[in-house]
Each structure stands twice: as structure tokens, then as C-alpha cells.
Length: 315
Ligand code: AKB
Image (cartoon, rainbow, N blue to C red):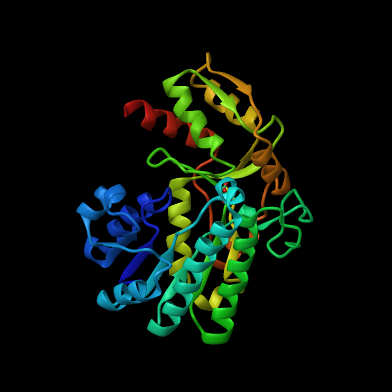
């Protein structure tokens, strides 16, 4: 990776991945692009920035040529809960941005990173220690349908045209920099904000709902390490399971109470989010990522909780 373009740079992942990549590859070698410069002031001030609607193939292609890009990170997505409110829009945006990334990569000899998700699994998938290669045919969210399609389409571009496509199935991502929006796993971010601001939290998924989660520094490292991995070692390409921790709402509550004993939580379940969460795995088996590119998480629930509370309190 020498000249990188990140589309959808202003979202939860991009707002941290852009500075992370700039710290490794140099500010001028990492171009951030998003539909609105207004919401990306910090990214635009620190390095190259382009306003781009990723569905505009011509504009997208012109930026790739202008900067001589060799790697595209496509982070454009409507998340799982928002997607259910407008499935057509979710398909158009999620698949449209990916399709453009792939054909532009093919024409300009770029590698492509795309986040897949635990949402790529459905009701027929084994729930515990979900294997890398398993059933993905009973997806109940348009977000998940897009993720499965994205994995297949990315494999297709690799097999048919030799495009260097790679992706991971991200768990719910937790960070203190930018709030996620419209995801099923968002509660696990919001709970830390409310622990600092209010001392209490109303959880929108019910007790006993286990999902995989990951602290953002591990997620950023995973993206870079996969893109830098020796291609000769990769048996898989699109949709590596990666895991760091799995917990339910009581688990994260207990972790926060270790540092904030007075913290209270009650429940007001959102049926849509609960249905999504119920259809996803409890925990993933990430053996293939460990074997093929030496993936290893650094943060467990306790280390993440300590850091989140410290960082949020200092803001
Ligand atoms: C969501 O909840 O939609 C996302 C995801 C798990 O991909 N955070």
C-alpha cells in the first residue's frame, strides 16, 4: 500500500482509520473521501480530502487516477438497523459503492479492502464458535444480504480478474472517537457514554444476547495487517472471521461496574435490533485469520472498558 483512497471516510471506522493509515504511510499518501466535507473537517485539514458520492463512478474513477491510487478502502455502508427501514436504499448504497470500488480497482490495478460483518451470518449458522466456512443462506437483514453478496462479489473479482480483494467480518466495533449510527451493536458503545454522562443506561437488546465485539484499535490493526499480509499465505480472502470478545448486556454492565460500582442498567428492547441480534452468532471462530495472517486481538473486555472510561472521562 503506497497511495490509499478511503471512501466513506467520515463514518465510525473511517474517522479513525484515516489518521491511523496516515500515521503509517504518511499524510499525503492517504486520501480521504466522503459525501460531505463539512462533517470531515479534521480529516480534510490533516491531509488530502475529496468530496465524493461513491455511487458516482466517474467521479470515483477520476480521484483514483488523480492520486495514482493503488489501494481502496471502501467503508460506505448503511448499517443493520437503518438498512431495515429502507432496504432498497441500503442495497443501492452498500452494493453500489462496492461495485464501483471493484470495477475501478480492476481498471486501475488497485487492491480493495471492504468490511464484512457478523451480520453476514443468519439463523441457519452455527451460533457458537461459528466456523469460517459455514451456512449463510438464511439471512434476515438487508445489511446481511449485502455483506454476503459483497463477499461473493469480491471473491469473483479476485478469481475472474485477479483484483487483490480482502475483507474481514467485523464484530460490533467500540470506540470513543465517533459514534456509530443505525447499528444493532451500537448499545455497546452508547453504554460507555451514558456511564460517564448519566450513571445509568437503558439497553435496547435483552439480557442474555451474546454478540462478538471488538475495540477499535484492534479493528484498525486487523485492516492494515490483512492488507499487508503475504498473498501466498491467504487461503481465504473475503470475509475472514476475526474475534476479540463476546459478551451480553450483563457482561458489559459487570465490566463497567468494576470501575463505576453505582452504574445502573434497565431494558427497553427494540424488536428490530433484537431480531437482528438473535439471528447473528454468539461468538466467531477466527482460527483461519490467526493461521493465514497471524491475527491476534490485544484488547479483552476489561482492557477495553478501562480505556473507554478513561478516554471518555478525559473528554
Ligand atoms: C451493526 O450492528 O449493524 C454493525 C455490524 C455488526 O456490522 N455494527
